[in-house]
Length: 107
Image 1: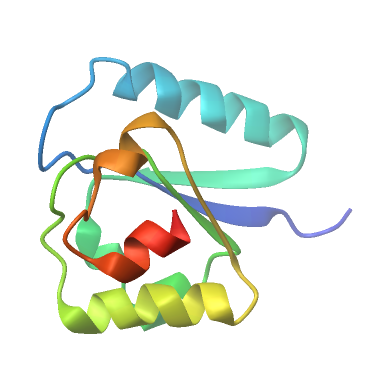
Image 2 (image 1 turned 180 degrees about the horizontal axis):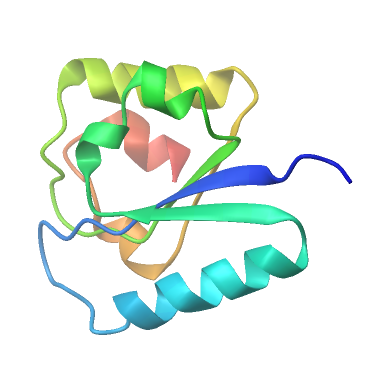
């Protein structure tokens, strides 16, 4: 059996906090298990660092507001995606990091 793909599911809320976060975490983990995808759900934005991202195949945002991440973390996320890794976001991810133009292009 192939190694599972690994997805970081980031659910940090720096703005409106959606009540659906626990359900989204559970549903994504359940769906992932059906297709050999391991989901790591976290609210810890410190995971957006090159050395941590190296252990994932994709990052998925269910976030809101201006996340407290550094310029280096922003660069690490962009480098991650530019290297061919995946990025996605749902719903509130479009209400995240609106003062960072590159994120707007990414999302």
